[in-house]
Image (tube, rainbow, N blue to C red; front, side, top):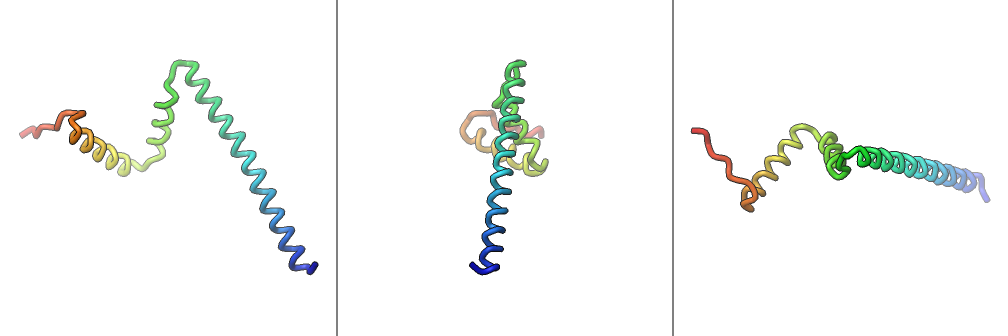
Length: 88
């Protein structure tokens, strides 16, 4: 086997091992997050709503406002919320 092939093999092995370590770290972090949600639930918080809050906090304010406006439009169209009246 040439040195180039050996070098490529070593690089490939190094990448695979790094990815495996990161995947293990990711699993550990995911388990930690799950534990925190469990603690919050035990204290009476709704974990589904906590997840939604986390999702909302990740969004840009403009993006969030746009999504809320679209949601309101859809809910109004379905008759699930009253149509906003003009204050004229």
